[in-house]
Length: 263
Image (tube, rainbow, N blue to C red; front, side):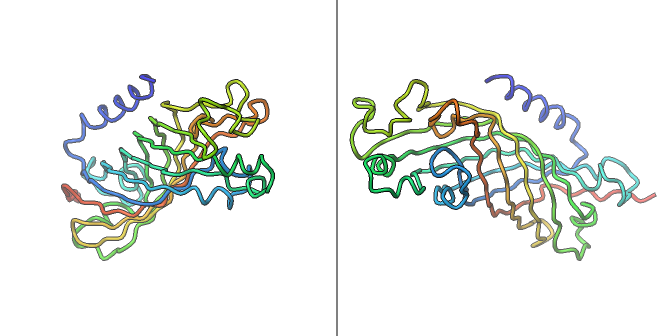
């Protein structure tokens, strides 16, 4: 558990220690998130879309276009890239089975409908964002460019806590209130845990004022774990890790702006 956190800390510290002449920004985001997990029908995105939650994030951005005195819009590294460090909180208050099996009028269908889970998660992440328009050209006070789309790639380390309840009774006292596939050894992983995940994003900035940008981002987070939701039913068959999608809206504030010297 400590290794991924140490790696993130070293990356952020190594960048920040030389960042006195870089530009810094901070942002705050809110949005909705959808979990794709063992709740619902495998391979049926529509059935899992109902398991929605809320997502909050705060972020720090570090850009590089002031690293050199000579500004070159074709300089991909300095003029198009940002490092984003994120603290993200995700909460699902109710996770249920949505599938043709849960709609069945059989007792097993009733057992599935009676199951209800929850999930809360705290993510620490680092992303590299590539902006299509050179950053100096977009951020400069004299710029008339309004939108700047970007792509993002990175990773997150997650601390989570899940739960499981059944309206048929306390499954800890009587495991048979759950469907048979959840009563086998190692079929449940209820409680606290942590996991590493890969992170992809697509978004855009809109220049609201000289100091403020509006931002919207669609993100995909793939966990290197199948324990996030607490269910590991059919262990020999279930080899699909959890993943989620985020749609967030936010505002970004430019803490400083250094205009490069043109030589």
